Length: 424
Ligand SMILES: Nc1nc2c(ncn2[C@@H]2O[C@H](COP(=O)(O)OP(=O)(O)OP(=O)(O)O)[C@@H](O)[C@H]2O)c(=O)[nH]1
Ligand SMILES: [Mg+2]
Image (cartoon, rainbow, N blue to C red; front, top):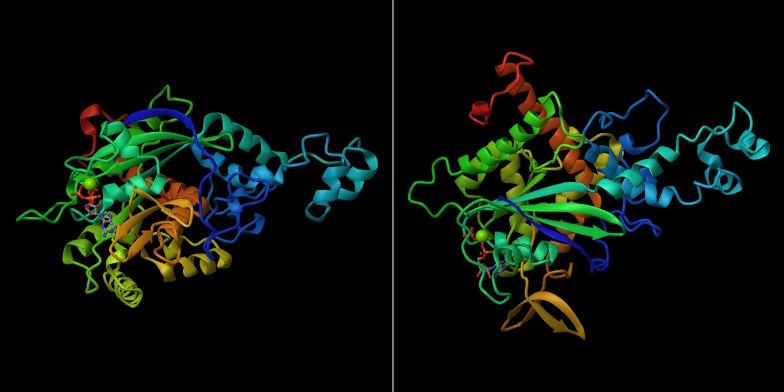
C-alpha cells in the first residue's frame, strides 16, 4: 500500500521562528529535544531520556521497546550533550559536567586511572544517537475528517514535499482529487544526518453519505491492523531485529470551521478513536474565520470535547510530572490548532511563501500571525514526536496487545485468520 520515495537530502527546514510554547533547539543540534516537555534544553527532556544509574528507570520505560523508541530521545539530547565527550573524558569533560557528576573531582585529578573514576554512563546518550543515525526511525501520521475539509492539502503543506502528488503521479498544478481510499505514502526524510521514514495516511472524507453510521469503521480497522501486524512480528519465534513500525502515532482530526458547534459525527468519531490512537483535533480552513470567531470557536470546541469526555492528545492522565503538566496545559489551552493549508507558493516581500491568494491578499500558511499551522508542525515534529510514539506504544498498543493475547488464551501464536476482528 505504501510507496517509498527514495531518500532525499532536504535543505534545512524553513521553520518560522519557534512559537512561544515550543522548545528551543540546542544551538549545536540539528534536532531540538523531542521529549514530552515543551521547554527547551535538557531540563525539558522526559525522565526516560535522562541518564540514570543502571537499573533505575524513568516512569515510562522505553528500554525494552523496539529500537525506534529508545533512539528518538537520543537525537534531541545527544547531539548537544555529547559534544566534547568522546576524547577520553579529560579536562573538557570535567569542565562541562562537574556539576552533574559525583565523580568530577577525582576524575580530573586522577586522569581516569582510579577505580572510583569516571565510568562513562553519560556516553549512553551518544551511543544511542549514533545508533539512531544509522537505523533512522518511523513516524506515522493519519488525517481524518469530513470530506472537503482540506486533509490532502494539509498533508502536502505539512512537509512541503508534495508527498501525495509525487507518488500519485499528478502534475504539480493539478487540483487535488477527492480521496477515495485509505492510502499510506512514505517518504524518507534526512536532516542533519538523521533519517526519518515519514508515512502519511490519507483517508477518504466522510459525512457526505446518506447514512453515515459506522463511518469510523474503516479507519478503526486500519489502525488495529497496524497493531496486529506489529504484534505478529513481536510474537514470532524468529523475530526481526527491528520491527517495521506502521502503527499510527497520531491522528489529525479535522473539524469544520462552522463557528457553531461540533457535529454529532465528530463527537462520536473522536470518542471511539480516542481509545486506540492519539487524537489531535485541528480546525481546518481557519482563513474562513475572523480572529475573534476563531478564538470563540476554539473555546467552544474545547468545552464540547470535555463535556463529551473525549481525551485528545496530550492526554492529561499521561503527564509525567509537574513540569510536563504545566507545559502540556499551555498547549491544551491553545488547541485545537486552527490551520490553513496550501501547497502553492507566492512571492511576499521578496520571499517565497506557501499561501492562499485571496482578493484581499495572501494568507501565509507558515506565518504565526495568520494561522497556527507552524505551531502544529512544531508540536508534531519538534516537541512531541517521541512522546507520541511512546504513548502509542505504551498505552494504545499495549491495550490492544493485552486484549488480543487474552483473547488468544495467553501465549498461543496468532494465526493469520486471527487478525483484526477483535472488535477493539
Ligand atoms: N479556504 C481554504 N480552502 C482550503 C484549505 N485547505 C484546502 N482547501 C480547499 O478545499 C478543497 C478540498 O481540499 P482537499 O485537500 O481535497 O480536502 P480533503 O479533506 O482531502 O477532501 P476528501 O478527500 O474529499 O476527504 C480544495 O479546493 C482545497 O483547495 C484552507 O486551509 N482554506
Ligand atoms: Mg483528500
